Length: 299
Ligand SMILES: C[S@@+](CC[C@H](N)C(=O)[O-])C[C@H]1O[C@@H](n2cnc3c(N)ncnc32)[C@H](O)[C@@H]1O
Image (cartoon, rainbow, N blue to C red; front, side, top):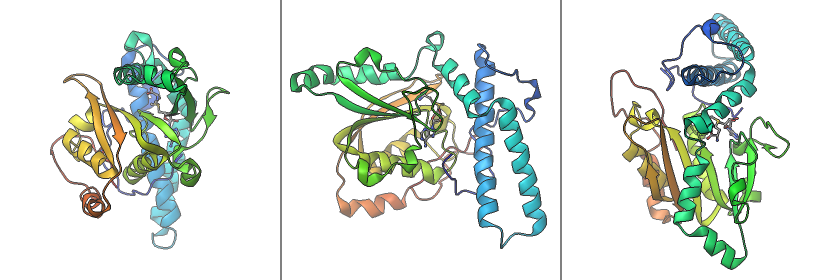
């Protein structure tokens, strides 16, 4: 699990999750509402787990014994609940159900459609090459099987569920080894999984450095991350992507929908704008008040 740095406790993006999971069925379920509830609960638990681990690591000298003891007890409860829910493997099973054809299929269909619109299959066939795609957060090894003639996919995940999925934390990939190595990177429902806002920003910058010039970044997020966040709007998120060094080629979501998708192209930023642009995205800005989630990406 990537390490988080944010110690403050806020209402998470998944605030509608129940505090008592005893009513949740064990194992997988085909009922969309149950699947969503379990996924949300996992997000809440993983985020709090990261915060507590960070607090216990950083706070030993400064915090009072009582605070540390209660943090340890809360962490133990959270780890027990994650374990009782079936761990990361159960979370991934729920996410796979969410990808099922009965729910509109996985987001790779959106990416493949956009790549076709760009004329990539023909262009790559003419050149006799393939698109080197790094699929981060892969639940299945064959999401791009239908494009094997022009896409060479490397699926990775924190917790591999198949021998053909490389078990690898994207945030721990060596930036030098991977510098400008990839033609495309997919972050589908991954940024919202990363518990720490700065790690989300680091993920985007790392993706930028790993793409070759003109390389493509596909991002999918749950729609509430941009439409119902206290700290994020679609405009703010898209301008943050520009600050990181991406231009938007495509975006898609609809009011009342569940998902939002983007396709960005890596551009090479002019160094003079870099510092100024980044400062705007280093701190949270409140855009909306009221009953909102706290999703944010910080650079
Ligand atoms: C909600 S699932 C999304 C799966 C699939 N991409 C989709 O769109 O349905 C998120 C997956 O991302 C993986 N993940 C999260 N952070 C990651 C990281 N830093 N490196 C690799 N995989 C990561 C998790 O282990 C999990 O399997």
